[in-house]
Length: 69
Image (cartoon, rainbow, N blue to C red; front, side):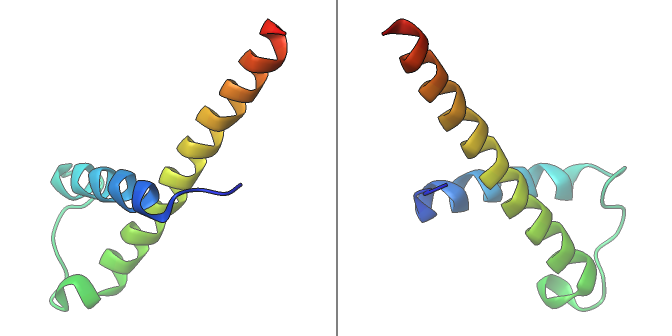
């Protein structure tokens, strides 16, 4: 998958913001701030989710193009 890095960053930022505001996912910030282990884990999850979403959209677009021809 070749994704635009800016697109991944934008989606990951939106996902991370949602996770940070959800008390069921992220109850309290660590004392280490954004350098903390919990924050780093959430950032990696957000990036993985963003890449996965982009890949799914790209795959659907390819299937639609293939079906329409």
